[in-house]
Amino acid sequence: MPERSKLLCVSLNPAVDRRIIVPSLRVGEVNRATSADPQAGGKAAHVAFAAVSLGAEVRWLAFLGGPDGESCRRGVEARGAVPVVVETAGRTRSTLELIDESTGAITEVLEPGPEILPEERDRMLFCFGEELSNAPVVALSGSLPRGIESSIYCDLIEAAKREGCTVLLDTSGAALEYSLKAQPSLIKPNRQEASALLCREIQTADDAIGAAQELRTRGSESVVLSLGAAGAVVADADGILLGTAPKLEVISTVGSGDSFLGGWAVGVADGLDRVERLRLAIACGTANCVANNPGVLDRKLVVELLQQVVIEQR
Image 1 (cartoon, helix red, strand yellow):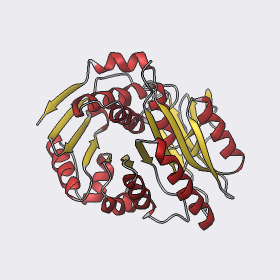
Image 2 (cartoon, helix red, strand yellow; image 1 turned 120 degrees about the vertical axis):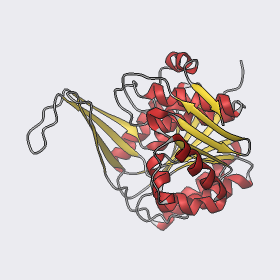
Image 3 (cartoon, helix red, strand yellow; image 1 turned 30 degrees about the vertical axis):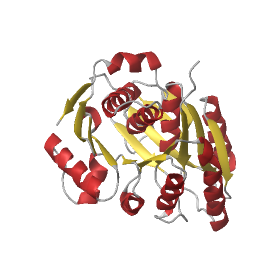
């Protein structure tokens, strides 16, 4: 039996995700849900779940605190990833995803993370260093909680690179801009995040290609600019790839970018070439659109979708 791919997913701001479905969302009125489903979440958890769906061996390192933190830990473990916990005095946050069945509209409410104490930050850095010896591929995902400086991803990237790890980064704003100094192996902004960083609109495929190329000059070895339903652009030393996603009837797009990164990470760990990595990542992001929970993918559907992804070299 071949050895399973090994990944480390790092979550500095995890959450308990609550997906609530209502027949028709009426603002300012009482709404009765037809479904309410709390799950362990946050971007890095979704990455981990997608990778586990593909058969990878995943360790998930996270700040966790309070009853919701324990619920999150149990949820990650139940999904097949191994949780590594840095306990915090503050409680783990919650997120709320409201799905309006009548329109398909999705409304998200995201709580801020807890205040992280200096000693908790130090324990995170120590635990991260301890995990690197068994983690050839490291995925750093998500926003930062209060008390954590924007430079922390830079510190984590540099530590991982010293151990020879491939480091994939998915964050935004100041944390992303600062982290480029550490030259991660890959960054994965979406259209909105790249637009904010470059201070210009990204509308067409050519806009996305230009944006990805410019972001690459700022420090990352590779840039994947995700375009949602339109697919993704890859810019690296070998040139440009443009991938187009197959069409599905969408339940929710929440977690699709994370599932994309989970597929890409497994592709790196498995030694796939850049074209096949992109194909797998897009298939995973697309499969997530019909998943009951973010990142929890139907592997058979992923395999079916692989044949429908179109990759163009520019």
